[in-house]
Length: 126
Image 1 (cartoon, rainbow, N blue to C red):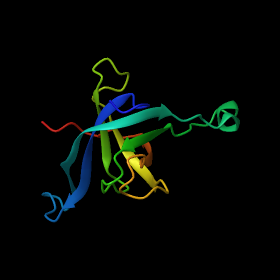
Image 2: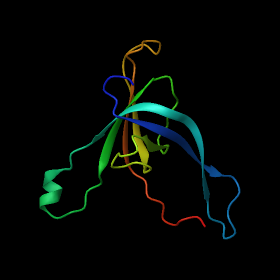
Image 3: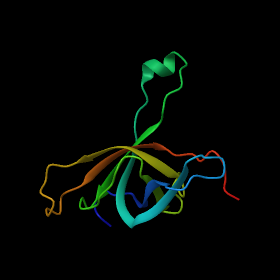
């Protein structure tokens, strides 16, 4: 395991099916593009001013992933797959922003920082 990483994730590329469903709505599809990626998972702090006013805030999370040679885009989803006793095991997170480090792409110290929020499906598929 790479030093500093505390979980492994799968990365899903989310796209839209060119064919609409019966009522003309867009159909979301996903393809598993990377498996067993080492990552460092951290929860971001909420804005205390909003919490004191009683407003809802969006929970955000930071993933630092290795290696940086992967192509990850906004709207992609991350799924925590290891360790199995992780608080968010099996849950998915939607990538909001992607930031690359300034190391050369061939440098083994290179990494990608992903800011994500929880992704919740509105309806289960039966």
